[in-house]
Length: 193
Image (cartoon, rainbow, N blue to C red):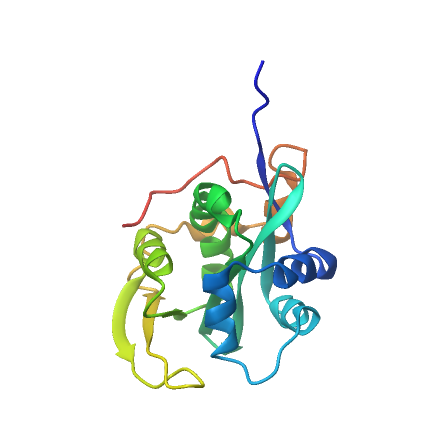
């Protein structure tokens, strides 16, 4: 009998995010390296804990961190990064994004949520489009060494499918759905993209 590997979405901890940041896949390390002058796994993890932050565990091991943080009133930045095993977590992260994270951010009054990806990172570009983000423009010279990034966003008008009523208890959403702290990754609002 083959064992089925499981993915769980849980609230992020400094320990889990530090582990993920110390074991980044090459694409994420390249993206972070060209955006930050100086960083360490602990500093990246600490920064990520501002706002909403979650971890995707694969077979009990933290493999991806993701979330969103408010930059100023109404403007949020979405982020994600992970280990080489992050790909196995993407379907559950995508479902969680639609069912929990999107509604949480909308309930906090976001008008706009932005995400940037290195133009060379084809996987990230395709995933952002699948998450329903709108590609807005190229950002030549955005990276520290002149790298080009692509700016994506979600605006209040583009996330009409997100039900704000599902966020009545956002702090419990990630911890209570199946009584195993797996969150609501199994439920999904209308898919975007």
